[in-house]
Image 1: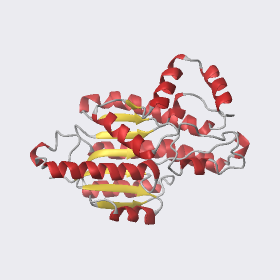
Image 2: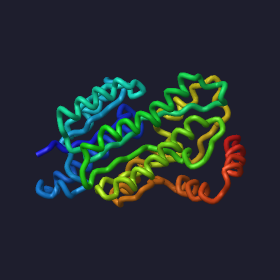
Image 3: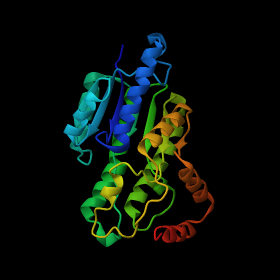
Length: 277
């Protein structure tokens, strides 16, 4: 029988790390219930034999070993480098696993005007937020089967243009549209794709990294920011329900609905007011 695994990028911190913890807890609950192995192929919440964690910081990934019960495969890679995907391809071809979850949680943003953010940071945002997520998905899909799930970590920033967060919001808009279209392509194969679109998350490294620019004062406060545990818990519930989009929280849902009906220029005007609060 093929080994059933989850693959999580950006697993050294934030939402990626929390997905590792919560999938581990879900696996433990299934083990305690004595889920029959004969039903695992049809069960999208099947017991995981292993979780593959991918991120640059190997020491952070190794710390997870003592925090979860599910066996962990630590894969220290920088996904902004194309050669990293050759390593992942070789590992998949060698192991031939059945991937039950692919969670593309690697990503980052930068706050500032165009002149405050370096070309290198712009390129890395596009590479990590867009290309790496697509490359991972393309590599992993052949190893998925009916009932498997792809979670693309998007953002409410993908619902509209955001001045002073322009490259990040554009990259998440790309990932959001990609996720929605890919979902339709995979419906016949029974592989589910969910775009997870959280608002600001207060207890991850994202905001600190985003503010590390020449001038990040364009966005000074992050009101009503959510917490990583709630985002991940909500996202996994939405995935179990087969939803195409997960908006984990009231702010996310209101933003998504508003962006469907209010023109982009007006939304940017509202944003210009809110970011000064």
